[in-house]
Image 1: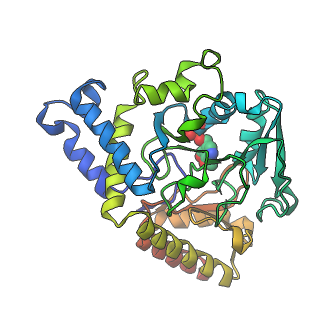
Image 2: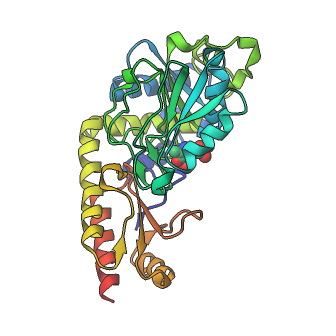
Length: 356
Ligand code: PLP
């Protein structure tokens, strides 16, 4: 079977097999990794190695803190404006609207700071990237969502916002290709797409921004400075997720790193888009320059056959192709754990169904 689910978590079989082998008796300690103290030398070694591997994978510069937090990307919709509240005094927080997730980030920020839209692709029904950007010196930061998981819209490049600190919700694109971290003030991502199981949230933040807000104003579990000072062990961390993330980072390094992964992901999605574009039966509505490598939404031109298609796909071992409840249709998520053979199998089933 191949699992095209958008989340939570599609994990590489090789990593799951390794974790399974280690589950009952981790490093001959007689217990699983979940049952040892997060402050033990054994676990802190895992935590450190995970950070080192991620730093190596993403070439994260030393002046950036890497924080292993909880609460999902949704918590960062609040965490970002709370931690950057000080930066926003007398200024505005700029948000780029490319669909459902970026909209949610904007709405939440408005509860804490003067948040405004700087660009939107709503006019195109979110099938393109925003064309005009209203950037000015009043902006304390600009937030955008490089990959809209539901709409299947992805920025192929990092937008140029000049000297304005750039913040990205990379939940569904992180680790899918190389990215220049130094272009960002802050990157955050829920773990459950390309990093590991749900429960862990990654924040990568430039250290000179850690004191933008008086610390007493922040809940400790959302305070970036406190997390950095405590090596992300302020309270009990999601140890299993952290351990699995380390295995995934090392799996990616062994597979050739993000350059190799980017090449695979580019090939996977191109193959599927080429097939859909040439088809009379299926359709992908997203403009080619904005197409996601990770989430490919598509519809059947004859929508009355949706249910029949999903049943047919499942009978052929292709799971969870149903689109998000807010948009309908179909969606194939092609995260790092999806091998190229999975895309070939999908195209094969799409072809057979079209001919049926
Ligand atoms: N942002 C993006 C781009 C997402 O894809 C998701 C979830 O799929 C979220 C935010 C919300 O993440 P969480 O459920 O971890 O809060």
